[in-house]
Image 1: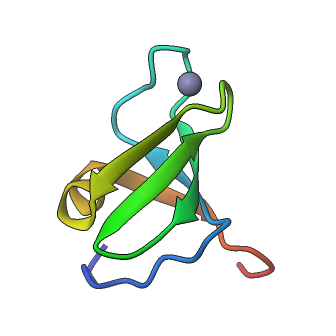
Image 2: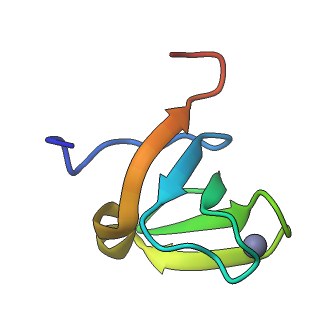
Length: 68
Ligand SMILES: [Zn+2]
């Protein structure tokens, strides 16, 4: 990941480095901005994290809506 100012889009599915207690590490971006809000794909729980933290914890972008 070279570009740290990547513009994430709502609906993008991502894999985070740390697993959620429910057992998945797949999340969907539901809000962007200075803070990123992500929703656990498995249990539906949402978490709001600062973009900088998000960039650090992001492992992989799985899919962008309608792209890739
Ligand atoms: Zn979960």
